[in-house]
Amino acid sequence: MEYEKIMMKYADRQKETCRKNDTISDHLFQEYGVYRGLRDQNGKGVVTGLTNISKIVSFKNVDGVKTPCDGQLWYRGYPIEQLVQELDSDSFGFESTAYLLLFGEKPDKQELLEFRKILAEARDLPTNFTRDVIMKAPSKDIMNSMTRSILTLASYDDKATDTELGNSLRQCIQLISTFPMLAVYGYHAYNHYENNDSMYIHRPDHNLSTAENILMMLRSDRQYTKLEAKVLDTALMLHMEHGGGNNSTFTTRVVTSSGADTYSAIAAAMSSLKGPKHGGANIKVMEMMEDIRGHVHDFTDKDEIEYYLAKILDGEAFDGKGLIYGMGHAVYSLSDPRERIFKQFVEMLAAEKHREVDMALYNNIEEIAPKLIAKRRKIFKGVSPNVDFYSGFVYQMLGIPVELYTPIFAIARIVGWSAHRIEEQIGMNKIIRPAYLSVMKEKE
Image (cartoon, rainbow, N blue to C red; front, side, top):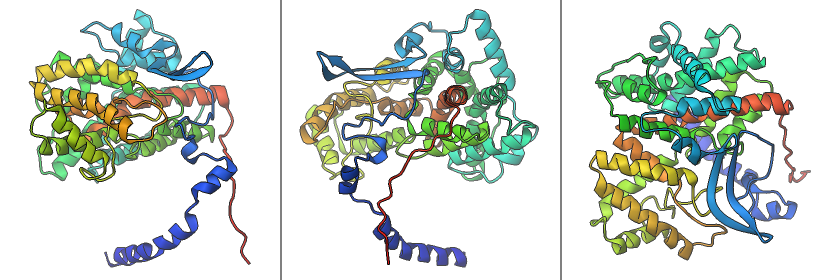
């Protein structure tokens, strides 16, 4: 402990030296035409690659003018709305959508049955892995726990470093199958050892879908409603893929391009996703909503809601950062297609859970916040609610603990990561090495 105190004191003293020597002024970025975060002032990302996996549309060319439009998200040539709408009320889409993203084609009935069987059989961790790895050194940070488990799984794989295409695909499918277990078991271990609560480890049921298994393994009584599983399945579909430019997917491609193994690439993606600027957005929404509930007395009073949202936007309330979380997106302008799809499922679940009053608050904020932001901020594109505005509310209604919010995101997004890893191996086959321009001054 004494050594840690000495190190912390030293680091605190030296951080100002780092600030002095590592700060790069805005005018240098402008002078050399370099974009911070690889995004221009309009939020458009610098093109760094090509992909055939998904497509995001937020602007259209109208008479030669770039014009904002309702957002669109396409998986392998199909709009996400179609993939969700094709499912009947008793069907789950995670598995068929995973097949589509991995292989680039919709599965026929026989192909889907075979793929579901493969996924089910892969839902099996090595002997004593839960006890010896997941339950050892449990952490509140389930993303860290999962990342440790991913890297440890490599030591159980005789072909861990073999990057042959078929082997990479096998590893990806196995990780897709086991991610729910790594997440849920990691939470149960933490909840038992750190919170002194009861621990139960339910084995996955090969006859259940991914969404059903998550709810079954999470709950002590293994019970869930059809609607609960359906809403979670829809959330997984909507979070599964979002282009090659998001931080964690780009991380997957960068690490893959170096020739690294699947476990290393996915572990790196996990480390990216856990960042609060990426995968933790819905947690900030939930914290903000709790703050709003504590300061707004009438959830139907739009004037009262607007008054408090204005205080948040002015940095006078909540966390003082002047942000209404869940509003706006780095890519979308007029609307986020995932939010449009998800909202109808959120409303159904809110009715089942008797949370209509909370739903009314969300509806009013969704109506008021974009207009308020447009009035008070200089924005280059439209502002609309994103999918994270509702996802935390859904997870709360499903009884999913906050510690699992980002891991649930990872359970979905590993499918997209896997598809991009395979595409990087086949379609690119060249190490990604961007250039950094040195603005260092020579010293005598």
